[in-house]
Length: 180
Image 1 (spheres, rainbow, N blue to C red):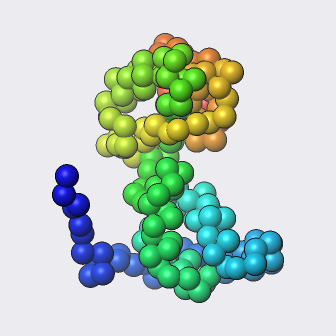
Image 2 (cartoon, rainbow, N blue to C red):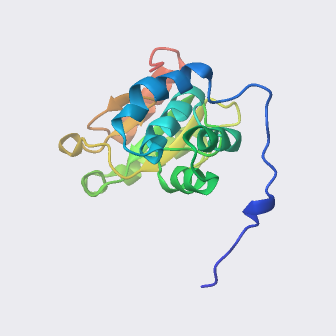
């Protein structure tokens, strides 16, 4: 299979007037995070996590801001953000439904849970509903193998799921009762 390349060097980075890496984030990184590491590269994951948590995704402008702040190569930031499933390089919905696909969840039927979400929301894995409310993601492990299959809706863990229970969770969220 041939490598498919893209011309990243000439990629146009969409920019907004306000920085994504705010003064408060820089202050937190400087006082709390950077002292824990010998090199500033060690603070990269926490910095990306701050951006992801605040905005729901990691825009390219934010990656460049993080690189400049930590005094590291932008390629290191882009490589890291694109490698880990935790980080999204595209905007996500208000509610991110993350279905675990680890071996325990696979054995316990995660495929049926994922299919129930796809059917209920009319989207595929990696897509966001047209109204911007839901994004469906599959990820490797949520660390709750004894209660498989599991899924996160934003940061709320739902355990021992069946397709029917997953649809009920989505209905609760849509009705404003499960706005986790």
